[in-house]
Length: 167
Image (cartoon, rainbow, N blue to C red):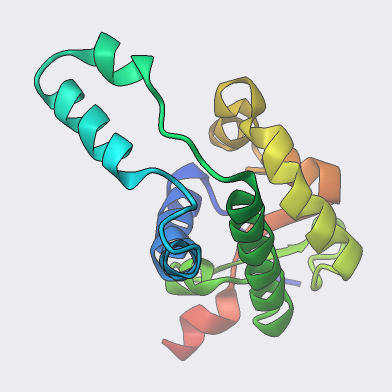
């Protein structure tokens, strides 16, 4: 049996960035237009950016844009479902993970994650985000490179040796 190589913080960060561009951003654009601009007040975002760029951070932070909870929930649920579909279809990978040749597996067996693990891991992102993203940052300091959501779901992110050989 070959040695498992765990994916570290930066490669996972790059995968997440690619997923944001290829999964979350397109979903956000579609939902923004479906909501007829009612999801969030884009004009307020532009105003806050202008305040921040002019050095007036206090004013930029004083008035936050209003968002529609129903459209925000639709966005979150859609991204959640799309991510789960990719994990199932691509055996623990998303476009970002495929791009950097990593995948999510069961921590003990290194086999595909099951539906329960996928759902637990996805909800675990919320927990990992709490307390200044410490659940994500811990990847940089652990030998097994597991984030809090990996530990909750019993998963790990490893290099996908099969896709590296195909490339």
